[in-house]
Length: 349
Ligand SMILES: Cc1cc2nc3c(=O)[nH]c(=O)nc-3n(C[C@H](O)[C@H](O)[C@H](O)COP(=O)(O)OP(=O)(O)OC[C@H]3O[C@@H](n4cnc5c(N)ncnc54)[C@H](O)[C@@H]3O)c2cc1C
Image (spheres, rainbow, N blue to C red):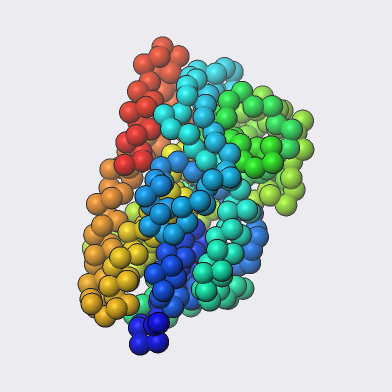
């Protein structure tokens, strides 16, 4: 149908890139996705999906994407000494490994007739070409205070579907994904003194953060070696300067903004940013609007949509990572004074 239409190229075949590609293909537009990696592969991610709505998935033409994911319904919050808060989650969060999810999306994109080039790094010098969408994940920083670590565990004994463990300088979430596997993933302040192998690094960070009992519980599970990964060189929050120097660029998902991992909302934001981009890109591809107008429309909508939750996440982050604020959080939890449902809602809208 579309020979005369402008082609759209999406750099990055993660959640934002592939779901946008499927959404555009379902409307008949030619789309290429350029992905530097290959599928399937493990990713550093809590794999806990909370906040994306059926309407978002419908917009992206993937209404059934999470149907087979595990529903996580309960949560418990812990220090190394005790559990200080337990609750039902205000709405179930879906658990599925990135190993499975990214592959499902790549397959659906190909079945929808998309062109997928894997093992190919998109050159940022080409990002100013009109019709190019940047969905390449976290912008790399030269310096960062944070390291994200992840491991899949077999035979982990759960207290609740989502366990959150708060340490001194970091936190770890453990939740259910497919096939009875527990995904342990957390964020820690970088400790230059820690030197450990890939499979020992998470345990070393837990020990250093005062979470020795948790480390002991994890040691008696079967850690899946190929799932043990780490990422650093990223910053939380808005990734674009307040006044974008390149207003005619479209950046989705983590390229646009990174919310604190404790929210379990980053993947939902990736899907939602792709959903926001669908209609403006369709209008651009039909030559109803120009590229600059298309980018402006998407950037404005993303800024409005994500403002509150990014602000809340920035505010709450220090409460999870130690010090007096963490003590206050624990005290509120112990005394049933934690407005958990309210915070949960405001971190998703
Ligand atoms: C420690 C940690 C825990 C997290 N836990 C959760 C959680 O529990 N729940 C949740 O919802 N979110 C969580 N997140 C956030 C979530 O992983 C991200 O928000 C989400 O993956 C963003 O999707 P994306 O499509 O923007 O980027 P990605 O999924 O990272 O995809 C970007 C893609 O671009 C590719 N790429 C990069 N550079 C290039 C290039 N130059 N050319 C071509 N391709 C390129 C990459 O290979 C990748 O496939 C967590 C993040 C961290 C760090």
